[in-house]
Image 1: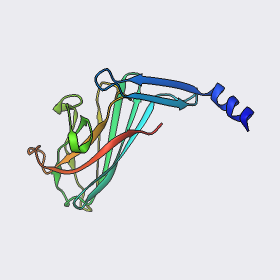
Image 2: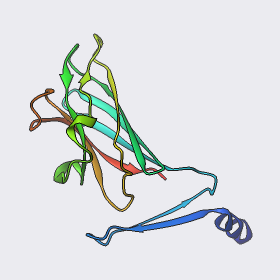
Image 3: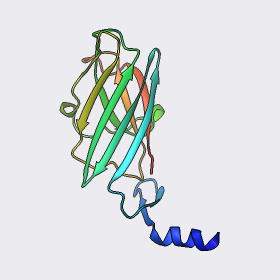
Length: 149
């Protein structure tokens, strides 16, 4: 058993990253063949449920949001922020990166954004869905992104 564990760890890629503000350290043990980082979030609020996935590769983050339980044909703004849902911090990227989400007749929707920056493994992030495309103070649903490595 110990030999198998040692072999596994010797083949793994160990990465650490420290947030310079909080001092929080992120440690990942992954396959050396894996490229990039994967993040995910469960989104919930009122009747809205869904998920977000972020793929970070080569200094870029692409986030895709899938939602259910929206009012048919309703349009919502969405954004990624530093911090957790309860304590959102700075916006990641600019407002123009996030195209509004418009629900189909069955109340489902999907949207994507390329953020132009890599999500930092030592930080927390959250996905916020707003009540409308123009009113971005009322959060209709939220989900905390986590590094799923």
